[in-house]
Length: 307
Image 1: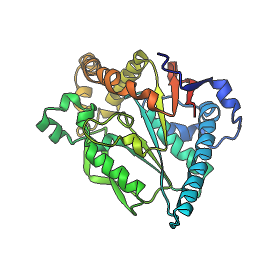
Image 2 (image 1 turned 120 degrees about the vertical axis):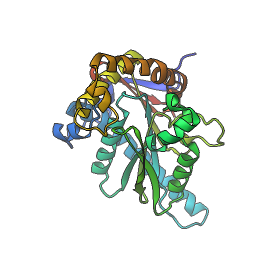
Image 3 (image 1 turned 120 degrees about the horizontal axis):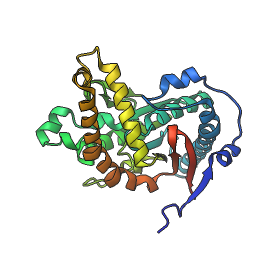
């Protein structure tokens, strides 16, 4: 079976030709501020990959709004704002958080009248105390470690047009959910939902998270490359944790560095790689667009689902 059967495939130059804008909406300093640890992104990436994607999303959003208006007119109902929801999936350390933040900024710049919000599903992990109680600390990131009922309820409230909806937040510094620091989402026109689990199938729920999505993106790369980026990011986390005893990585930063990296490799092999192979990668072909990365986080191929 050809896994790319339902996708049109483009190299970077061809993709850029669909919207060959030379506008520079951001500086390299802006990009450095939003990129995740060890991620790489350039002005050329914005112009050649992300601006054509933003143009496509702009067209999709306009069609979405027009169809919604026509539906409400047909049903003789008053029109109301219905958020357009974009899901962004991919492995840990692949750079999906950077892509999500970049899409948020570019969408706002090209459509400044719209409210564009971004949340990550990390906040919907069970708190560490609950994971320990359930014996799931070594399964953190796997489907069963998320409070899917809460995530589905959140998306349902956003789609229903609730004035304010609270999303829990997560700190990678303390490696836990911040229950007392929720993110408040107020009637977004566009909501970006980023996380490793956003395209996964439910275990018990009658709904998929992706049932609420109007467009979805998967950030892809070879597992060996992702492992390399994972370990490089781990080294940077150690470097930033040296003087902060509250940081989850502080004890590793203070101890033997080789032992710390041995631990990180073990976590990748026991937890992150099986999660990628068993639960994340199989969802790739549920995405509307796949951004494939090669060395140095360079996007070299784009796969767009055929209508």
